[in-house]
Length: 43
Length: 572
Image (cartoon, rainbow over all chains, first blue to last red; front, side, top):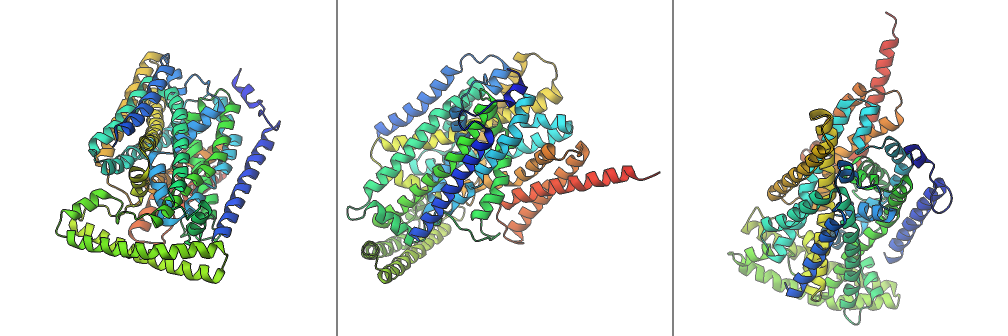
């Protein structure tokens, strides 16, 4: 495999890299929201 | 320490090291030694990245930080997933396309040799200092608590790391880190379960969480924008993104982890895995600290967590004063038990008025306890002015040594030593790679044989191991160990990141512009930090230094480029 061919690789799930990146960012936003609710609930 | 704990600790540590050396026995070329065989799957890369960042300090200092300051430190990591995505989009494809050994190699093609060398040297300074602290920080705490010699504890960590890093190179580092990370995560999870089981029978898990919340310890997210507040959502998302972009994108100790991936996809997945897992993992480590806090509300803690300090006071003329303070602490502790039960009861029946009253009563007793502890710190200073009186970093290890069952003490010590070794191994490996590739092979000894560079890489690993050990032997305890490492990083990362930002996005900049901009930025960052520390200019949180350093590089290189092209455009 040449180095340029690396660039054409696809992720194993969700078909495209942008979809996977957005999924990661959305999960992160959900985690922060959960932490915020945790902070509010227990304080 | 019980013989079973010794057996568990040594079997875990030596077993992992032996496995790493055995798995990498066929490493015979410099490429294989510095890049592995480029055959690592994403989960090994992800765990290796996590293990590189999570030093022993993470597992000693972070629970202590939660004990004193609550969980707000979790926000420090909020920028990480964003940084991981940016790196996957921008940096990884470039590194893979150019097939580089180090991140700094890219800078020569983009700018010139002096920029590559300058950036590599900045990395060597910051990472070389941090490697010493990575060994020293756990060594001083463990030696104090276990009664071992500091020199021998430093040597135990340092020599073992040097042996397997020299033997197997980068692949040995990744292979051992995977095992070490499994031990670390399992150990911390078991510690959390044991802590819950050690609470009094009439206090349930949810009661303990509610108590911590009412006492202000569950402050995970704070959206208030305040530049002087070290940890809030904004410092994590803005300053943190820049710090992690720099750390993961330009620090060779991390770049080397994902460059040994089987493919670009595996490296990307490894980074994204780290981005998703890191924040919850840090939450778990901080939460363990919160459970330790609640545990010590119901079980009388030592009046000072660094027992070596207490021993000195007990053997001094202040022994009587210490005994009086211990008696006062016992009275406060006994009073607190009643108020805590009242608080638990009020929370269970959701009686808001009673909750507020009990909360105030418990907090008043905690404040009294803090006053007694401050007086103990004064006694320690009077006994011996050079002793470090901050004891946050000793909280978790004190709990481990005094309250965990036999066998698990050995496992948790293995966790701490594993963490120390995993991060130190990456650092030594990266320092040796950068020295070999960016300085030695590029500027000192060109066109030698592969065997020559392989031997040079091994020599530089031993050399950097020796330097880190020497620094560890003479280092003094910083205000907070984990912060010390992050502050050192923040002094250099902004400039390094700025250079890479201009490299990736500043199409018209040349080597002279960026070199001058980088020098001005580095001097500015150091001036701002020193001015803030000594003259107390603004009391700026150190995370902002990453942003400032980066912006100065970008801004000045842009101005210089404009001036240069403007100058050239002038008619004769």
